[in-house]
Amino acid sequence: MVKSYEALLEKAYSQISEPETETGRWSCPEPKVMLEGKTTILENFVDILDSIRRDEDHFMKYLLSELGTAGKIDGTRAIFNGKFESALFNGLVSGYVQDYVICSECGKPDTRLVKDDRVLILRCDACGSHRPVRKRKARAAPTGSNIEVGSIIDAHITSVSKRGDGVAKSGKYIIYVANSKPGQVIKVKVARISGSIIFTERV
Ligand SMILES: [Zn+2]
Image (cartoon, rainbow, N blue to C red; front, top):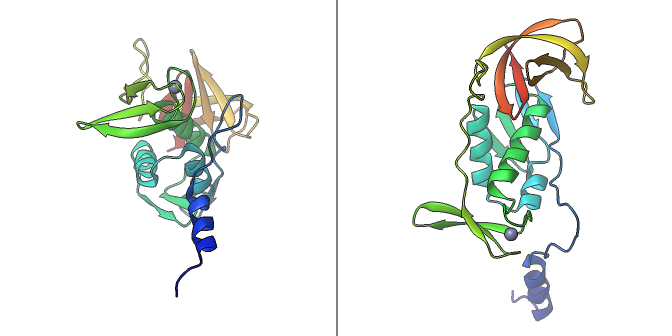
């Protein structure tokens, strides 16, 4: 059956991506994370992808390698083996946005990733600038501290975050621990360090 001209036209229009018309600060949707058995589900994987307009394999690979686990894309969601806190996903998504989406010149997200002689370049359509994608920062904490990713630490929970995670402090660090209450001391593994914020997993 031959499709009508109108139908083709409509299809063509629907495939043109809308230019970013909003003014003000762009932000991508907050990760919606839930636990299902021994897996963690990123419910709005595709929503985030639509917002950041990146390749799903690239984004998924990044998440898997940062989480150090296996997983798969399942329709509009992504499934990861193991239990991870939602705070961890917030950190990962914002890390990805900083490294692979936001233009460091103008701060806009209207960018594309292009390969130039094996180097991944972030090209900005808004201001025309381009830069090589920043190498992932070393995962170790700043010198003078012995806290690094993988370290096992005792978190002395002193307060509760807005999201309901327990909060502990150690030197300049703020440590988030899921399912914990003030007064508890909990052994946790450092899963990610973002500035002075530490995301943890139970051990
Ligand atoms: Zn720019």
